[in-house]
Image (tube, rainbow, N blue to C red; front, side, top):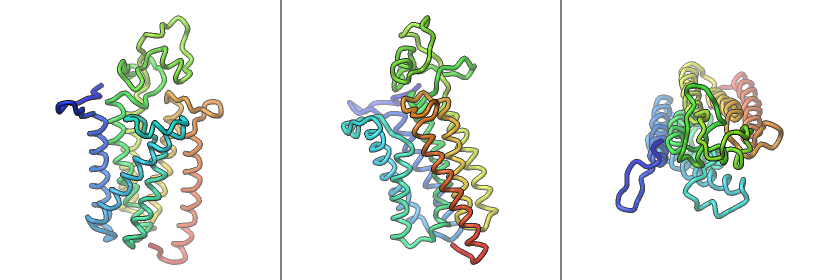
Length: 269
């Protein structure tokens, strides 16, 4: 764990903050390449889209976190960013920029989702470095203990905060190794990004690549949630994020079918 990289006086530079910046840089790099490659936009368009997505993503992630726990004071807490809250508000912000700059919506969507997948993969490394968003205890050799995590992976914290079933013989203060679900998501998001790139170069129907990338990221999140240490399981083993994942997949598949039909009739952009 490297929660703090260095200090400048009383100002702390966190690994999470650095990785978030790198995530936006990676997303911009991919978005810019894709926009220019298709003749859809330029560097200024890419900058505007990433800025809108970044602001909308951070505000949405914090708002979702505060709403989830019913405490609006959490909006000003340094920790607490929920992926789907950020995704939903960032989508609204990006759509607004697309309309304002008169960009081809579906081609821009394809380019933006590739940037989203790459940026998400990079950003999850930051979660790992600060010990946030980890999984349930595991005895697998790649399990990781977070003694100073957010929160630490002690038996007591996992019992109280996440209702993890841990044998009573394990003392509350014992630090346990858990699934590094942050790195699982990084690896899976990179795979989705690589597949998305291949489809982007091959498929001619605008929007098709983007919808499949979004659906694949939702499926990835749905699966990883089973291993996450979570306190928002509302139906047995299922979490709120999994419910949203299912909705995202359904909407993406419906839109994908409509895109295929529309493209069969005329060349939409």
